Length: 449
Ligand SMILES: C[S@@+](CC[C@H](N)C(=O)[O-])C[C@H]1O[C@@H](n2cnc3c(N)ncnc32)[C@H](O)[C@@H]1O
Image 1 (cartoon, protein in one colour):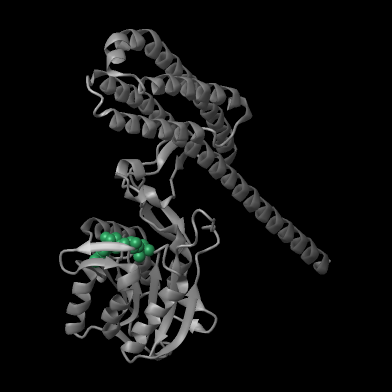
Image 2 (image 1 turned 30 degrees about the vertical axis):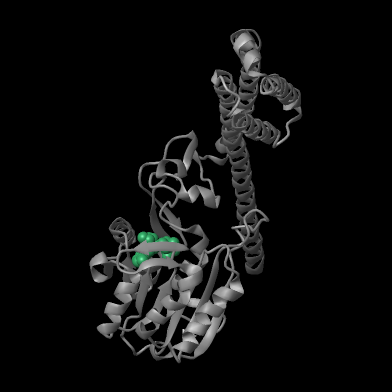
C-alpha cells in the first residue's frame, strides 16, 4: 500500500516536472517568435523609411543640379554640375535597389514601376546637360514646366505608393505581434536595436522603442537569479543591466567560477575566518557585479566616472535589502583611483575590470581597450592580494580573443606575478554570433599569486 502511494507520488511529481518543462519551452519559443517578428517589422520598416527619404531627397537634389546648370549662362561649370548629377543619380538608384531588401513578391511590381519612373526622370534630366548655352536660354523654362515637373510629380507619387505599401505591411506585422503578445500575456513590447552603430546615436533614438501595449514605468525592476535590478528604457542604449554578463554575475553570486576554481582564496575557505571578502568593481556602471558579490556577504567598492550610475547602483543595493552605506562607492577615474588606493596600500580579494571599448577622462586621457588593457591590468595588480582573483572582460569586437588574453597574461608576468588558475569565458550562447555581428565579448578569470 505504502509503496503504491510512493509510485503515484513519483509519477505525479514527474508529470508535474514534464509539464513545467513543456511550459518553459513553449514560453521560450513564443518569446523568440515575438522577438523575430518585432525585429523584422521594425528593422525593415526603419530601413525602408530611410531609403525612401533618401530617394525623395535625391529626386529633388537632381532637380536642383539641373536648375543651377540651366541658370548658369556660361558652360564653364557644366562639368561640375554634370558630375554632381551623375553622383546623385547613382546613389538614388542604390536606395531604390535597397528597397528590394527584403523581397516581398506583392511589392515587386510597385518597386519595378518606381525604378522605371526613376530611370525615366533621370534620363530626361541627363540629356539637358548636353545643351549649348543658346539652347539653355531658348528652351529652359518650357522644358522645366512641361517635361521635368510632370515627370517629377509622377516619380514622387510612385515613391508614395511604395511608402504606403510598406505601411500596410508594417501594420500587418504589428497585428501578428499583438496576437503573439496576447497569448504570451505580455503587457507591452519594446524593440531594442542591438547593432553597434546605434550606440553612438542620441539617447532618444538609441532607447528601446515601445512597439505595442502599455509603456513600462520610467524605472522598474527585473529579477535575475533571485537578484533584483532596476532598469529604465528612458536612458538610451544601456538599460541598466548588460544581459551578456549574466553568467559572470552568477559566478560572483555563487562564488563558483568553474570546476575547482572558487572565488574564495584558500585563506578564506576555512569556516573559522570572519574576514569578509573584499571586492573592487571598476567601471562599475549600475553596480550589478557589486550587488551579486554583496549578496554573498562580501564588502564591495564600486568605482565609476558617472555619479548617475553610482546612484543607480545604490538603488540596486537597496532593492535587494542591502545597505549601500555598508559599501563604498567611489566617483572618479579608474586609473586615478587605482593609483590612490595603491598609495593607501588597500588590498582586495577580487578585482573586476570591465572597461568600455573607448573612454576618455580629464585625469587619464584616452583609454582604448585594445591598446591600453595591459596598462589597466598593471595598475590594478598592486591592489590584488596574493592568491586573489582578477576578472578581465572586454567587448572590443575587433580585438581577437588570443590578443586580449595575451595582453592580460603578459601584464601579469611583467608585474612578476604568477597565474595560478585561469578560466576563459566566451560570449554566452544567447548572444548568437553571426557573420554581420561576430563575437565581441571575451572574459577571463585568473587567480594570481
Ligand atoms: C561597459 S560599462 C561597464 C559595465 C559593467 N561592468 C557591468 O557589467 O554592469 C562602462 C562603465 O565605465 C564607466 N567608465 C568609463 N570610463 C571610465 C573611467 N575612465 N573611469 C571610471 N569609470 C569609467 C562608465 O561610466 C560606465 O558606467
